[in-house]
Image (tube, rainbow, N blue to C red; front, side, top):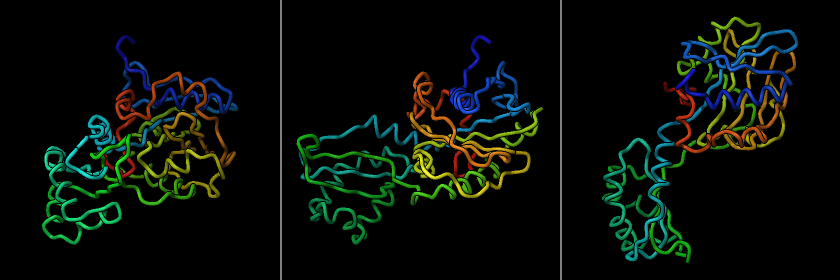
Length: 288
C-alpha cells in the first residue's frame, strides 16, 4: 500500500523467527488494519500469531539525543573535565544556562576529582540549587589533551543492578500483564491462530538488556505468561544480539541472532530511529 509505514521491529522479529524455525514468516499487520497482530507463521502444522513490542523509554532517549547534540563544552575558566547528570523529568534549559557558573563555583569551594561527587551535598545552598535545576550528580577528572577543561551534560543514570536472566523473564511476564500491554494482549486474543507469541525487544536503557545481550545460560524456570499467550521471545536492539524463546512444547531455546539480516535494516539502537516502528507505545515502567 503506497505510503504505508513498514514496521522495522516486526521485520527484525520476522527475520529472527524465520532463521530460527526455518519457515516463512508473513507480515500480517499491513494495509492499515486496526488491531491486527504483527506476524503470522505455520510451524509443525500449527499457526502462530506474533505481536512485537519495543521496550523503550522515550524520555530517556530524548534526553540522550539532546546530550549527544550538546557534545563537549570547552571552558577555559574551569580546571577540570566535568560530567553533569540531569534528571530526565526536568526541563534542561534553565540548568544549561546555570551549569558553567555553577561548576566554577564548585571548583572555588575546593571540589576535586576525589570530592566533587559528594562535596555539594554538605552545602545547603548548593543542595537547593541542584534540586531546583534537576542536577542528579556531578563528577570531574583531570583534563586531558582530548578533553581539556570543560563539561558534558548527560541524562541521569538509572536502572539499578544487572538482573539475572530468570529475573528478566519474571519482569517481562509482569510487563505483559500490566496496563501498558493491553493492546498486545487484545491483538493476540483476536488472532485466529493455534498459538499466540509475544516478541519483546529491549532498548539499551533498560538493565534487562544486559543479560539478554550476552549469550549464556538459558533461564531455569518456565515463564508465568498472561492468559492467552503461549510463547515469548526476548531480545535487545544490539546489532549482534542473541534471542531466547520459550514455548510450552520445547521449553527455553537459544534462537538465531539478528546476524547479517540485522545490518540490512536501520539501526534501532539510535534514539532517532525509534520513529521507524509503530510498536513503541510502552516502556518497562508500565506507562502507556
